[in-house]
Length: 375
Image 1 (cartoon, rainbow, N blue to C red):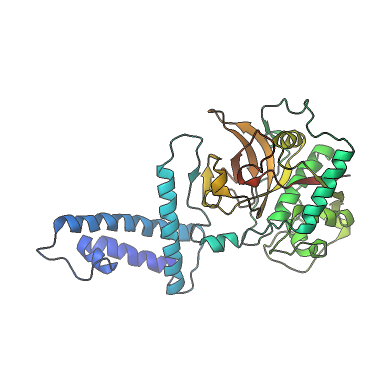
Image 2 (image 1 turned 30 degrees about the vertical axis):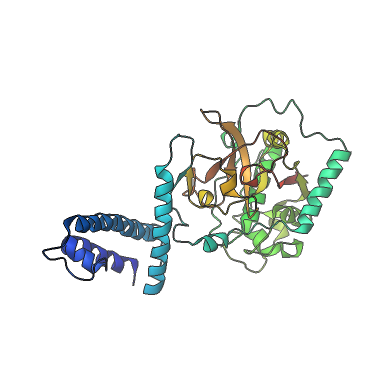
């Protein structure tokens, strides 16, 4: 049954049958209420019906907004049940909000997904090989005595590269788990603009299709360092020449249309907020983040401060484009996501910025920090 048919069915029940008939229609009572029914009980069911109506209407609006096409009544019922559960979670969480800076949740594209369905699109992978490369690079940095804690860089109390015109618009990866491609390109786009004064939108589809031999796996898994290693041997193309389709295809690389190569990845010290602040003061930084939580899934606004709720398992790739503090002095990172502008704060999320070294940070944002070594 289509969404429009379900909507007609719902409206008919709500408008034409009255409270008693609608209760019967929706299966909330087994027979019509006659005299002798406990009025308080009946009114209680009426209030439940009002709440049920709100969910019904919210689900129909959601399905239309996000173009959901449920093929069977069984799928429709399953998704509606999941939506109802998520809708309740969102409303109950928001009811507890006290301060302006606290997180607010919202119904978004993930509202009909179970936790396992949502996590299936979180495909940043930090392999043993990637960790080893990061460790070796940071040890080399230490041996060369290149101090990322330069005090001259840490004077800025806030940085927002969006205001400087070096950040491309937020994009949407869709159902393809290619977050690693979007994060690596977002950092590269900004680095290229800073060095050459030209802001391009690079091809995310190129890395999804072409970087498998460097350790990535299309829409299923990957990380940013693999992309930068791929770009040592291949130029990045423009999105206009190799547009995103959101699924794995045959590699269509064209060297003649490539823009630039990079000399592999560079890393920022792990678990060191001062080093990360210094790095972000110079350029946006691609990072791994723990994104499994309800806070992240349904994030609308505010600063995520609950480290326990976030967890520490890195499974998504994003880009830090700045930092600052709220009016009530909560320090935060400004993070660009790749889930479109309808998610979060126009496609961005703010996560609490730790100020003490030695911790992984809220949502583990200080564990894996990488950017392109642009030639």
